[in-house]
Every structure is written in C-alpha cells, then in structure tokens.
Image (cartoon, rainbow, N blue to C red; front, side, top):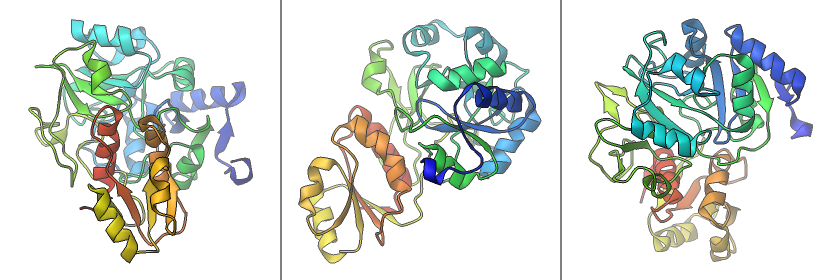
Length: 337
C-alpha cells in the first residue's frame, strides 16, 4: 500500500484523526474505515454536508444513509428512545456491525432518511467510533464508493473512486461486508443481510424474519418489503449495487460452472480456496476457505485488476454468513445461471 499511496490517503495517527474530526465539524467529507467497509462521512445534522455525500457518490435521493454514533447520548440527538427489543439488541451487539431502524428526531435532515420517519443508525467499533467521538457529531456515512460500485474494504479502493476526499487509512476492514440492518416494527425483520447472521441475532430476538429480496436479479422472498412509499426503508436495498467493471456470471451449480469454464478459458474464476484445484488450467482468484474469509475478500475480488475477460463465481450455501455473500453476489451479477 505504501508504494501506491495517494496524496489524499493519510495514515492514522493523532494528527490525522484530529484533522479528520475538524473536517467533519466544518461540514466537509471524510472517508474512514469501519469494521465493515469504508464509509464516506459527513455531519448528519448538517443538511448541506449530507448533500455533499449524495453529490460525490451520485447516490439517488430516495436512498437513505446510515447515521453512526459514538455513544447512547449521541443516539438521542438523531432518534427517539429505542423500544425494549432495540435496547436488547443494543446491549448485545453495540458497538458492532448492526444497524437499527428507529424513529427519527425531527431535527435530523430529511435527506438523511429519504423523507422517511425512521433513521438507520448504528454504533461502529474501533477507529470509526473514536473519530465520531472526537468530532462530537453523529456522522452520516454510506459506503465510500461511487454509487453502484463494489463497496471499498481498503483505503486504496476509496482513493480510486474519490481522489480528492480526505481518507483515513486503517488498513483492510475486519468483516468486508456491510452491517446487518433490522427493523423492529411492526415485527422484527432483517432488511439487509450483513456481517451479523440471522442465526446470531435470533438468540436475542426470537422470531426474527427477513425481508423480500429487492436485488435486481435476486431470488427468494419474505413477508416484509424493504421499500416504503417508493423509498428504500434500508440503505443498500433498492438499487443496483456492487457491479464490477467486467461481466459477472453467478453459477448456481458446480457442473454448470465447470462446463462454462471449458469453453471460456480466458475468464477469471472467483472461488473458495478448496475448489481452486478444480480449475488447474484456468485463471483463478482464491477467496478463502470459510464464509468469514470469503466475505472479507469478496469486494476486493470484485474490484480486482487480475486478467480475465469476465468474472465467474459459484454460489455458496445460503445459511449463516452465506446469505450475505449470496445477497451481494446476486446484486453484482450480470446474469445468474
């Protein structure tokens, strides 16, 4: 990373943290690492600052953004007191990769919530929380990528999309996929699959359901829609996301992938490490062995500059973190076969 460092990328130290915090207070944009992906942040209480996020990303105005807080006192600036089920989740999973939909405070700019009366809010871990605490303001921050592109998991990814934005370089992110988003009214429902699995959340909230998929090519279903009056109830669910620069084909069966590979030797196969020996004469990019490793490597793989006329990937079992991986692959895919 050092040899390719961009002028707008800053190593994390006391000076850069204070500079980033000052920029946020002044209404400027700052890109920073969370434990999930890098975020493009602005003061959530400043409508003009939030507008800069949408302009920089090319993000549709009806796509809400997540507000990040450093503590429960800051939470009270953006949301009404959380109901009992939300308090249980906060006690168990905050700080961490869980976003909750709560009733918004009227002082929060409507652009943050796409005009909805709910706000998506979470308390991140580590460096992101330190930055927000230092800035002293809640920070609205979607992923730090141009709208529709794969989410960034390194500072270099951010600098590729935003060469003029101040970027804090905290190294590769821990989870590599975004936070899980949950609504609690009228019943608990996962609106966006993420770094926390449904199984882990059901231990705290029994009866948790999942929303109908809204991916452009996604399959599956559920009892709850993730859109409200045309606007997305949850960030990251309405529009095409994660699209690589080359065509991506998602194969649901191993036999279909193997047959396609034989006829397309110049394609690049993204595959779990144990499956790499199946493609001895093919260009491959190993993603890791466990679901956690695959999730961590996925977005970087979608941004890879490795040679290959197209990207090919095999579906993973849709359980645990595999639901999140499949959600991202379905949204990224040019086609599913």
